[in-house]
Length: 174
Image (tube, rainbow, N blue to C red):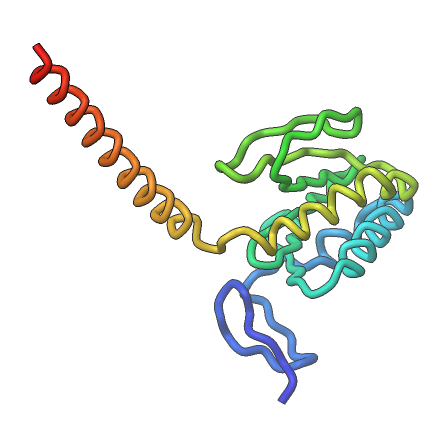
């Protein structure tokens, strides 16, 4: 029995069966785009699919590309495709309209694509970097934070003990 589980309602959907718990689909988001943007969208999607195993799904007004976590998404607009790429560093380039830190390990880069020819290096390099970064990150950020907190707490206790012993030696030396 081929099929899939809906990402939104978790219901099992048979292959070819119509499912409409969430009216957003890739096709619905991209069907009204002008020809230039349709071509840019196709090239962007093909580039991402070539990276390897991932989940591609529509959510609200975006098409999400994710591995363990979302590594980039596309918001189709009337005049351009708004691409948000999550990297582990801040990139300064003419293509990047805005860069916002979204967590300790990720920076969201907003890029506008208006033509198929814009889907080439360095954009494709950034997408590849984001794809590889998404595999290395912990899916549960609290896990990484908890480990680092335990390590820093132990380090702080050692430093405090060292200060106390140094203070005790000084006071005995008087």
